[in-house]
Every structure is written in C-alpha cells, then in structure tokens.
Length: 73
Image 1 (tube, rainbow, N blue to C red):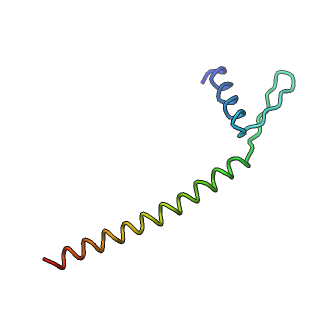
Image 2 (cartoon, rainbow, N blue to C red; image 1 turned 45 degrees about the vertical axis):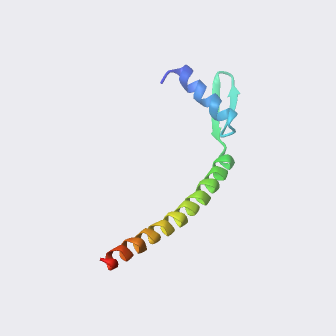
C-alpha cells in the first residue's frame, strides 16, 4: 500500500470519529476511538438477536408445514 493510500484511509477513519491523530514534527500518531465501535457493536448485536429470533420462528413454521404435508400422504 502506498503512503498516499494509507494516509487517505487514516483520514477517512479520522473523519468517521474512529481514530484520533496527533502530529508531533513529522510523526503522526494514531489512536483508536473505541466508543463509536462499541455503539456499532450494540446495533449489530440488537439486529443479530432480532433476525435470529425471526429466522428461528420461520424455521419452526417450515418444519411444521413439512410435517403436516408428510402426515397427509
């Protein structure tokens, strides 16, 4: 990866609030900002539980449907 490409990635992460950059002379120090990642993790966990619950219900309904079809034969 070129320096320009790495610098662009750092700027994107910094503008998203995921990274804090400090410059001392020619040295750029980057530090991760965990709070926004924790918020994203909570959002993902919520929807993971939501979809797991709904898909488990769908699976149960399909299994019942297939059992009903088999018992009618």
